[in-house]
Image (cartoon, rainbow, N blue to C red; front, side, top):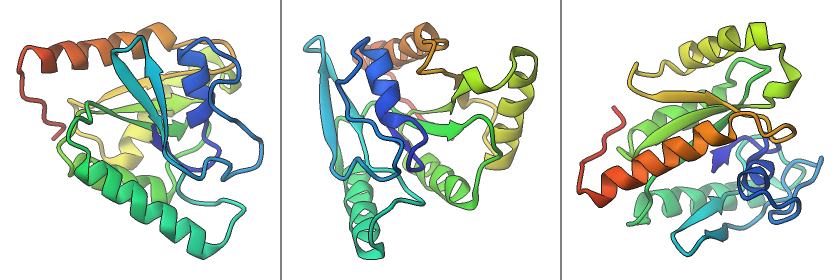
Length: 178
């Protein structure tokens, strides 16, 4: 799970696993300071990374997080999918754009998840996700989903996407995100 500080990475993990306090959450940005692994049915791990952007911590600490996140994503051999979370309520910020461009360049399956869908009326969600796709300049083949950790909306769709990526890898398919 990759995204800005406080976008809902830990909340998404809790929601996906139907466990309220599995991953530590806070209203204060920057609470996740390490890479946290959550085993799912002895089949995979969901990985909660520290957020990028604003966090209530020192610049040195944020730089350190950036370095180990970069190393993790570049060097992790069995990384199956990058789930990039963006706040559905806002157009992507400059660091979201930079992260997306960099993540797409890794050639690892990649999905955008527009978080906090419960804060946007149903009729406006498609427009918000379209603005995110446009702001990130996403290729047409990149999947984008919406999600609400509060209501669980989008949970089945995200699990379906994760399973399809994993099953494709098990059959030896090559995945490229560009």
